[in-house]
Image (cartoon, rainbow, N blue to C red; front, side, top):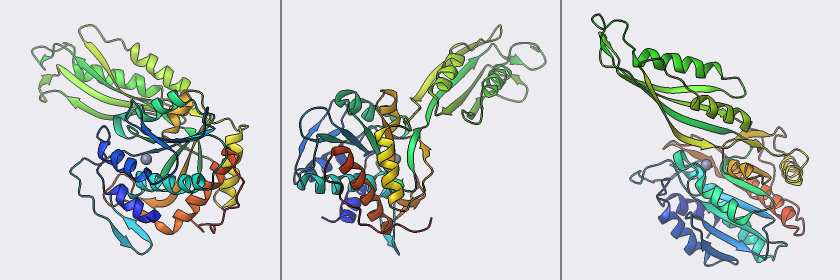
Length: 360
Ligand SMILES: [Zn+2]
C-alpha cells in the first residue's frame, strides 16, 4: 500500500465527529499488518503502542472530519494536487503517521512510544479523544499531526471558550408597555460588556444573535453565541469568570450555556521537544517562525505535557468540499516527522532525505 493509496482509502471512510467508528475499524485492520500493539481505549481512540513503560512520545492524528456522514466522498487529481473533502484534514496526517511509524517499527527504533488515532477533535468534540489518551498514557512529549500546516512548527496552542447566552424578559407592546424590560436591549448591554474584555491577543467574538418578534414588540427573548480565543489560559479563565458573573437588569433573566472549551498554552522554548522539532523543521528549509493553532496539542498542554503540532503537507480549502493538498509536499512532511520521532525515541538519527519543498 503506498502512502497516497492509504490516504485516499482513509478519506473514503466517513468519520464525522462522534461517529468515527467505521474509520477506526478500517485503521484497526490496516495496522494488523504492522508491528506494535493495537487496542481501543474507553474514549474510542485507536492506540498503537510499542516498547515498555512511559511513552517518550505520544503522536496524535485525529480521525474525525467536519463532514456529515452523507457527504459524497469523491477524490480527484489535479496536477500534483489531490482534491476532495478531508484529504488534508486529516487523512494525510493519519496516512503519514502509519507510514513513518510503520517504517520506524520495522527498523526496531529505540524507546517506548505510542500513536493515538483520536476521536472528537473537530467541532464540539472538545478534544475528548486526545484528552483521554494523554491522561491515560502520560507521555513525556506530545505531537499532534495535522494534514496541512507544513510550513510552521505550532508551538502555541490557541484555546477557546464558547457559550450561548439567553435572555428572557416580560416583553410587550412597544408603546402600551413602554419602559418594560426588553430581552434584546438587555442582550446588547451584556454583549457590549463582554466585547470590552477582548484584546488583540485574546479577542472576543459574538458570532450569532437572534431574538425578538416584530418591530413593534418589546422582545421577550434573545440569544447570542460568543467565543473568546487566547493562547494564555488565564485570559480564558477570566472570560469564564465574566460569563459566570453576568448580572441581568431587573425584570430580565439570563442563562449561560457552555458550548465548548479548549484549553490554551505554550510549549516551553527551552524544552527538548521545541529544540528537536524546530531544528528538524529548519533542516528541511521550512520557515523558522513558530506558529499558533488549535489542535489536539491543546489537550496535552492542559495536562502539563510538552506539546506541539506538526503538519505533513501544503494545501488549501480546509473544512470545504474542495479541499486540496499538494502531494509533492508530502515527502517533506514524512521526512520531518521521521526526523523528530527518531530523535525523541533515541533511535539512530537518520539524515532526512527529502528535498526541501520549495517556496510557499
Ligand atoms: Zn485537523
